[in-house]
Length: 228
Ligand SMILES: O=C(O)c1ccccc1N[C@@H]1O[C@H](COP(=O)(O)O)[C@@H](O)[C@H]1O
Image 1 (tube, rainbow, N blue to C red):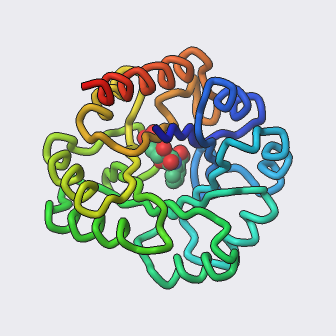
Image 2: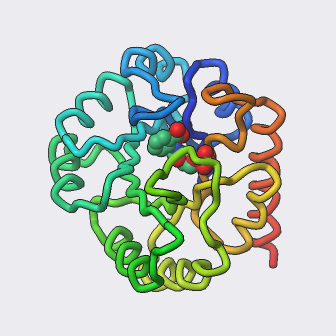
């Protein structure tokens, strides 16, 4: 299971996530309480294990800006928090010769219809430049780091169906924490899960106890699912 711990702002937190078994650590370059600079991240990534993915979260739609930041900060993955845009995906892929893995965020709001979600998810999961689609909660137009979930009951069956149909990889995000991550894994059978605020002590600072609990609970839920 792909376990992403996002919105790290310092080496201590990112290194602890890696030590506790995170598959990926994320850094937010988008407007946020947890925003970091390219220089800050460039000082962190060389000290992290090579096996851990280093993910940059972006809302900009400028491929040059994203590629430049990724190279300078030592990123291996980019999370596009902007709307699905094949031109942007292709521009990044071409400029990096396919060496940067791309995650496409899909916002799920209260007024997102099942058909809208199906079309967006299908488009992202079948695009050759997209490694995985990340479903995040959108509330009042805001998404990312909100600490809020989207409507799991209304979306689970559809998400599972599109995953199966496309063979694509889905990450669940939005309001996850140590107490609900197992339920998310049982509900969606996702490829991975992603958390930012649910393992913090304050915005930008991880809580080591919550972090450990989140990763233990996620791995346990995955084992239970695989065994059933
Ligand atoms: O974390 C942020 O502040 C943030 C800001 C802007 C875009 C994305 C951001 N984070 C991403 O949002 C998801 C969900 O966050 P949360 O767990 O609900 O707090 C997170 O996993 C990051 O990928």
